Image (cartoon, rainbow, N blue to C red; front, side, top):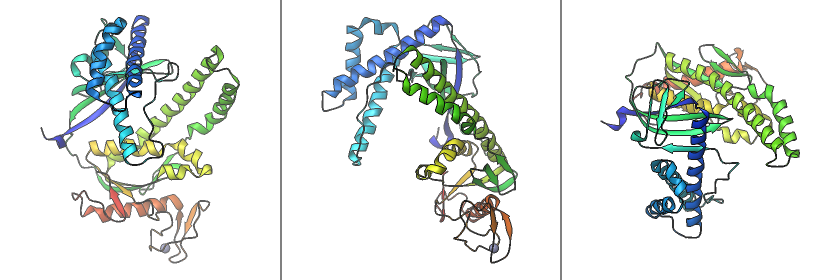
Amino acid sequence: MNNADVIYRAHVVELRPTPNQVEFLEKCASHSRFVYNRTLSFFSGHPIWHKGVASFLLTKLRQDFSFLNETSCAMQQCAVADLDTAFQHFFRRVKSGAKNPGFPKFKKRFRAKKSFSYRDKRRFDFNERRLRIERLKTKIKTRQKPRFDGVAIECTIFERVGKWFASIVYKLDAPKFIPARQPSVGVDLGIKSFATLSTGEVFANIRPLQRQAKLLAKRQRQLAKKIAGSNRYVKLKKQIAELHYYVSMKRKVIINEITTYLVRNFNTIVIEDLAVRNMMKNRRLAKAIGDVGFGMFRTILTYKAEAAKRKLVVADRFFPSSKTCSNCGIIDDKLTLSHRQFNCNSCGISLDRDLNAAYNLNTLAQGSEESLNAHKSLSPCACVN
Ligand SMILES: [Zn+2]
């Protein structure tokens, strides 16, 4: 099969393990961390990382520490593979002359995320709300059924706020292209409303973090006064994690709703390159932007557009979408963020600032329509897929 006909999708399901199963999951996570740290400590004293040697070392570890035989060897090999990835990233950063190349770190017992993986489809099996993993005799109940009908090739199990999840990666046939009814849309992302479409539709912003921010700040302050590792510290830390989890879930629901709507209804979608990182430097904007999750929006939209064979156009970050008059094309340099209305001095048009920007973005789609299959960047925009 041609590579272009295959896509990879992950499905995250919540597990409902029994206490005995939780014990096993904890054990797997702990062994995975043990193998990772032991291998890392071996190579910390040696100048050269060698994956082959690391694999050999695992065999040795399993002989020396017999408890490692209680969990899957394939799972432990994944821990070695993860360390290999960490080293490859480190080498890449050294090569590119990064200031802090970041040598792989040890996974600390209380701080590291509990997780482990199986990257071989024979080691696990997921169907009908049951997950089987190697070396666990009973199947784990799951809250969800498999979302995809394809070959599951990878399974990562992790814990978050006291719950266990499995992220299962599928290899799927790329879906057939079904054209949408409307050719294109410009999407202006904002702080006041999350998204304004060139069709005039507006998706409100609920800004979940803002509502929770006060509580979160209070808890953070309380945490600072507690002794690290104490019972109260652990309890508070859990509360904070739960708060973050709640916020991120709520945000994800909204983003999924908007992105699904866009992909379902439009063939070409134009968004701005907000360069989230750069904007994060501006403190006042930073909180609101981090809050609404533009980065997450773009990531989710990108994969959904790819799956549905939609064209996603990302306008250059210097494209003056807000400052250009969508009616006559004149650029108003004096426009600042505080102007909520766009008033054109040249043609006299007056409209909502975000809607004006959305119109301008949509114009870029029309410009790129002629070379729909070119897959090349057009000035002033760059195509993502
Ligand atoms: Zn004008």
